[in-house]
Length: 261
Length: 168
Image (cartoon, rainbow over all chains, first blue to last red; front, side, top):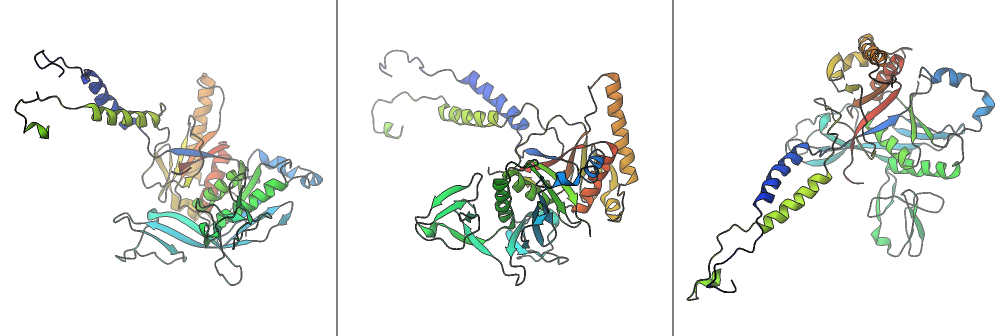
């Protein structure tokens, strides 16, 4: 448009071929795109039952056992316990909360789990199906009083511990705290209000304890192994979450065993 | 061109569609889709009514020989229903050998097929690899019996399929 008397020659690039390419490429990629990604978890056979490991385990000399860590996480419907070197850590009692997302109106709510009691939709009152159960939260409770234990969390949802890896309930300015990531992240408290007092997740405390074990017995012969022993009625979802925590705490060799009685 | 009204001489109107912004958008979409593109495609097929648990695991499924799916209703081997899950649940928990016979039969047939393929030279060795897709609401009892069955037949290399969590 510099000179109106001249024939205007279009300065634009001819985008039509490019457009054609886009119009075919985008549908093709949209079809082949995976939005929900599937991953896998490697599993070792339950040791006592595996056809190959059976003989190996029974023939092991007794003194050899003392050098091994033999880390075991015992899961029942209300307790998680860690055992290593033939001893047990204090049990972690938990109560279950189920997080539902309704299929029809996407209503999002969390209820305390009571065995045998059907869960109702808070607005419409219909029974919820187990397919709508999205997550299972385990909150740590006191073993006797069944009172929920609360602890401090960062805004990223990491649990805070002190130097002895114990969860903290209170933060003061100048305190040195550790956020539960792997490796632990040091936080010097500047503003205690940025932390939130929330019910302590049993998974987080389990991860904390597993990391403590890892830090102490890094050189153990079976320092990468953990056995998850579960009771019959434990739901698979919980086992997967516990396996996740074990992997986050650097115990990649996970095997599964059955808890008898 | 709103201010062209008041002028005496009309500025020649460009009748072409302005595609530049659309091109920008397309380019961004294309980059995003290329990023999420995987050449292998989906190796695992989902059975109906099967909700996999969420996990932080990032391990990608490799080449899969055999799939076993456990839903609340059925146990499926390679997407073929074999036995109702209720039958597995019914086996008493203290049974020393808690394996449903029909499932053993089916898995043995698959294992034999794999051995046959080794004999023919199609694959190098029997890997005994199995991918187990379990609904997240299945109890451990059923899972254990299924795993026990797989191990007994010779499928010692077990993998659990899970959904990747959105956030890192």
